[in-house]
Amino acid sequence: MKKRKFMALALSCVMVCSLAACGSKDTGASQPAPAPAPAEKTDDSANNDNNADSQTPADTSADASQAADITLWTYPVGSWGDAATVSGMIANFNAVYPDIHVTVEYLDYTNGDDQINTAIEGNQAPDLVLEGPERLVANWGAKGLMVDLGDLWTDEAKSLIYDSVQSACQSNDGVFYEYPLCMTAHTMAINRDIFEAAGALQYLDEETGTWTTENFQKAVQAVYDYGQTNVGAVYCSGQGGDQGTRALVNNLYGGTFTNAEHTQYTADSEENIKALELLKSMDGINFDASIAGGDEVNMFCNGTFAMAFCWNATQEKNNADQGNINFDVLPMAFPTESGTPQLCGGIWGFGIFDNGDPAKIAAAKTFIDFMANDEKQAVESVKASNFWPVKDLGNIYDGDALMSEYAKFIPYMGDYYQVVSGWAEARTAWWNMLQQVGSGTDVKTAVEEFAATANAAASAQ
Image 1 (cartoon, rainbow, N blue to C red):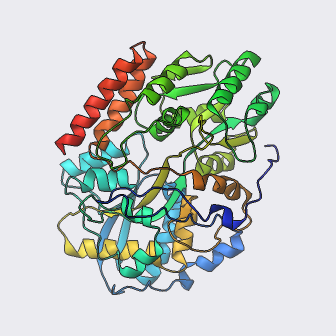
Image 2: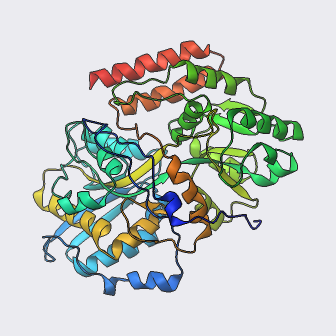
Image 3: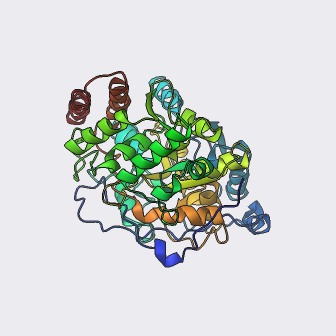
């Protein structure tokens, strides 16, 4: 891979984050939180400081003699999807709590939801899940399946965790169903080599990673005319990676996905209809009902596509480490008319299914507290995600050029709307709508049908 041009960022550049408050009863009460200081992965000698022998119990009333067998099901959040990494962190935990035995199941985003829903139906739900508020709060929490984690949200925890993240981790009636660990801003990316050869780099700002809607059109046309006919794809075989297609459509002309109160879906706005009509008309952009976000990432990495809409720092790191990329990746914010993008943010943390066993619930809370709050383990836990902490843990990625580059996108994080009621149904309706648009259905008709379906689901909850 070519040596990339990295932007030197002072920590102060990312200490203000526009991740909007969400999920609380009064969305105007919480001010935008400061973003965590960007940093990057240190060398192995630094990681050795986090071995099991150095671990000490977090400041908690948990008893080291607790005994329970619990299950953790984790979505592939960075290296939290890697058995060797997770086993090492569990060994750290067991050095302090030797009688809490943790069995891990590794999920993916293709069928992970189906696996959990099947387990719920069979009264075999896992004790712990690592995922985001859209599942833990807006879905399973809203259905009364999750444990109230309010006792983990001590005054000290609330004073440390960014306000906007707190808001996303609780239901509209103030019940905390998630304890957060890490966060990021989702982006798109381009194959810089192809864009350079096509003369398309002139249409974007490499330093800030931003471009206008007009210049996005010019760049795509230049790459298409160069001979790269598959410039990008609006993937829609399922919900995987749908944060990318939502952000693309919303940003092009300033549309929104929900209202500010997170009570109604607004994707049928004139701005979003205009954006979908634009994408449908562009040479080189195809609506592809045969692929989802993960497929798009693979096809971007192997050179089939010149851009990806399902991207973030972890995607680049993982694919680069695996040798899947042989070109220079340039991460980009989604194009906007205003020049100020609103990126979809990701928040990940732990939730506990209420399986009716107080000992298992107590042990699961102890596990969460250790992984997220132990002074040394918290750093290791966050770095395993390849994302940023939800509280100030210092410059944990100091010297890491990749994470420093992606840190420039944190101030562009927009409203975390994924906690609106009916979210699961809305996600399905979204990719169904994209399929309809791709097959020739009138855009306005398809989008209005989406809004009606999503809002009906929201009203039913």
